Structure formats: C-alpha cells, structure tokens
Length: 134
Image (cartoon, rainbow, N blue to C red; front, side, top):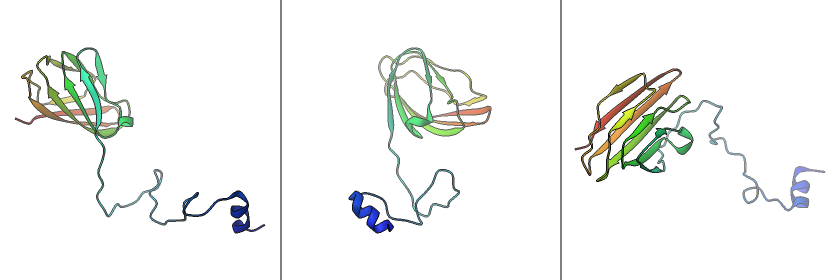
C-alpha cells in the first residue's frame, strides 16, 4: 500500500493533519542560523515576598516579578541566559542573592523602582548583573 493510500485510509491530509516537509523547520538538536528575528513571551513569576526564587529557564528567557518583601534570588540549575525584570511595590524588601559566582549592581527598596537583571549560567559559573532603570 502506498503512503498516499495509507494516509487516505487513516483520514490524514498533509498540511492539515500532519506537517508537510519543510527544510526550514528548526530543530533543538541541530545547529542553524536564524535569519529573522523572533519575539518571546514574558513569564510572570508573580509577587515575591519571602523564601528563595530560583530562576527556571523552562518558564522562558524573559521573566518578571514584583518585589513585595524580602526574598532571595538564586540562579537556575541549568546553563542558560534569562532577563528578569523586577519591580518594587510599596512593600519591597531587601533582595538577597545566593548561589551566584558573581553579582554586579544592586537593588533598592523604593516603591516603583524597576530593574533588569541579566542572569547567565554556564556550567558551574553564574553571573547576575542588576541594572537599575531609574
């Protein structure tokens, strides 16, 4: 039986039920050069007011949270780069860092202050760079 006959018997149509072959399909395990830009969704990690917030690349490489009280920021387990926006609210507390090889920059606790945190982990080394936006 031919492929076409088998697809018809199963009620499958290429391009509708199954994807047609596309040489430009990006694969996770194949090197490629992207020739067009792309956008990313921002993961909202919510308000942090206690405990440890460990970054997780599975939530995406663009993330945000609200500083609503003292908490600890820790690097991801896996090698990755994450940009984290932190916005202070009226209850903002001191942000402690733990597990980072190197930390540059610092946070304030002023209501409304915003920060972009560039978080990079490669192997056992990690760097957190905190950039105030005001």
